[in-house]
Image (cartoon, rainbow, N blue to C red; front, side, top):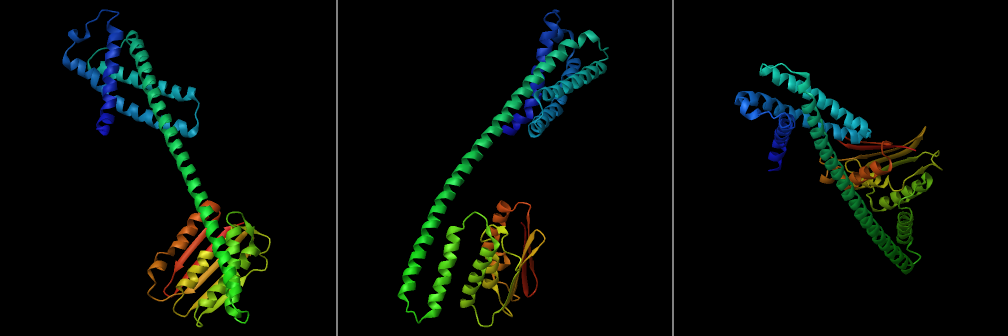
Length: 336
């Protein structure tokens, strides 16, 4: 029903405009337009106006959106619409008179032109107000959504803080219950506690890259404890990476992905180095010919990483993921 209304609206507008022109033109001069002209004559005047109303409506729709996008002043905005109305009005009057074999008289043009400009100006103002109202409504809904998202994020952040605190305290309790001679379990808990502490107190702000590297080294050592003895690990961190700042925990999903899905020859290679103003992080792990389903889809962790990079480093990062027959390669480049 709405589409039908939109399709007929320009034609309806053209008919109303034609009636007003006839009233404004004929009543003061006591003309009898409907009685004095044939149906064929009237149709030749009405149909071109109806047909012209559709491109005119399209022009108005395009122009109102363009003006809002470019911030064009109201005088220029309405000036363009008036010029279009004058041009189309003149063409329509000349064309209808030509089809009916009547010479266009200069004195016949002012009233139709004035009425046409007023009508088109009114319709454009109505369309403009509707567009502004819709944009305002969309803005309002977006603002409400942002507020709701912020509230949900804050709630999740508070919950996320509670759980690590609880787990951190539980780890300390377990740590002191383990006998001192059991060095491996105690060392494992120490590493896990350090990792939790880093995650807990480095949520959003940038950190020095050397702190992130220390975290990655502990994270890698924790994974090594649970990995097979067949694992061959090559790790390189550029010594030039010290005081530079990055957002925390961006590299963890790539390291986790490598350890989680390493297969075949069980070889993992991790390189992090600085080149000019860019940080390069390269991870490579061997895989079997038949990948697990999650790595075939790049994993949830990598998908979340992509979203974080879009928010934290818009247009300042590249993430290249390449799968070969027995290798899975990822390279992340950040502009510092």
